[in-house]
Amino acid sequence: MNRTNVTVIGLQWGDEGKGKVVDAIAGHCRYVVRYCGGANAGHTVTVGGEKFALHLIPSGILHEGVHNVVGNGVVFDPAEALEEIDALADCGVAVGPGNLHISRAANVVMPWHKLADRLGEEALGKGRIGTTARGIGPCYADKASRSTAIRVGDLLDAELLREKVTAIAVVKQRLFEALYGYEEPLDAEAIWRQYRDYGRRLEPMVANTGAMLRRAISAGEPICFEGGQGSMLDIDHGTFPFVTSSSVTACGVPAGAGVPPRAVGRVVGVAKAYTSRVGAGAFPTEQDNEVGQLLRERGREYGTTTGRPRRCGWFDAVAVRYAADLSGVDEVALTLLDVPGALQTLRICTAYEIDGRRMEDFDASSVTLARVECVYEELPGWGADIGQARRFQDLPVEAQGYVGRIEQLLGRPVGIISVGPERDQLILHHTGLEMLR
Ligand code: IMP
Image (cartoon, rainbow, N blue to C red; front, side):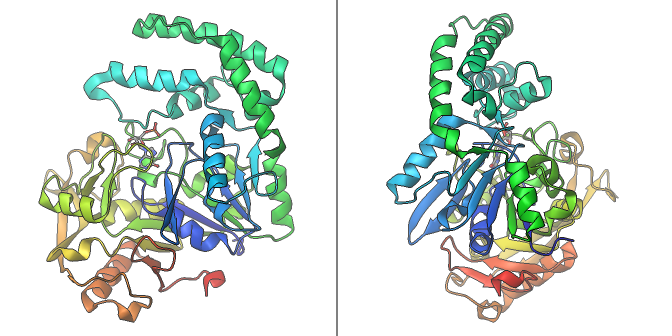
């Protein structure tokens, strides 16, 4: 195993607080790399009371001397990225070729991808996925189709870009008309000009990021791979079809960043002390009642990207264990532990049953998960505010017991515990990350 690198992934349905965990690790790394997803991600980092909502730019951007990489596996929306770059500049964080590198091979989210996302979801009605409407699925679909895809490198060649945009716009127009009766014309010339201009602004930051990272690996420079979304939203291993369109687990790192599998390093799986989910799809431990309501309000569970209220429920040790096994998680970062303690009694799902029989091998299919019954174990809440705790022993004994039970059920240590949104509201527990000690 590569001992200098760290991969941080989500073990639930996204919004686990990965941004904060990456932020804690980033300052000790030379590179922070996004390898999947796009502007559908929403990483909130709070520094000095100021909130930064990052969607495309890696969470290492707030640290000086860190190279932030948008890998080839990301679907890159230049309009979003430039907006974020400008917003960071307004907050005094300069972003440029010294700290941001965008893969030439990343696929570009075009206006027709966002349109297709919206029109497709509307047409599906009740069967819709509940996407973030950021054009993610349609962009990955074009990547797989190849002939209708545009890569970041294409933005830098004005004439090639014009040819591609003109040809693809015709195809998309026909499709939209035929599928959805959408007749508004796509102005290929205006789109071309806009994306050419984006290319001009971004050019200094566009690079062969795979080569850059492989060089860093040879030199032993520490890299943090930053996952987007959560394992249960993985295109292959999640609750299909209610998933996102990329490989978000640690298994996605090599292909999405252009590095060998060994480069993944130590895998930190991030899980909330309860569960949340945005969008449609099965959610076995969901509490569509006052418990869910309390978790949503205390946990401020409203989407960073879309503002949608998140569905909330109990900690699901079955799903998290599956996700941890899938990515070979070495340690868990347990976040938002300050949220569920207010309840008198907490529940953890320890097993699933279908038709009265234990489900032995986890089956992530949405159809199966919609049928499972959860077996719960009850644990006492702790009432007290734990936002000031900085050592494990500062936590009420009930909170310690809750963490200990999660370690047992997951079969791996809880390395880091987060007890609030601020950078310093962190407890180092059984972490094997030498850099944090
Ligand atoms: P898409 O990624 O926009 O296509 O959305 C597909 C599904 O993934 C929807 O249920 C979204 O709500 C969910 N999703 C995508 N990105 C995130 C995220 O960063 N956090 C939580 N859910 C997400």
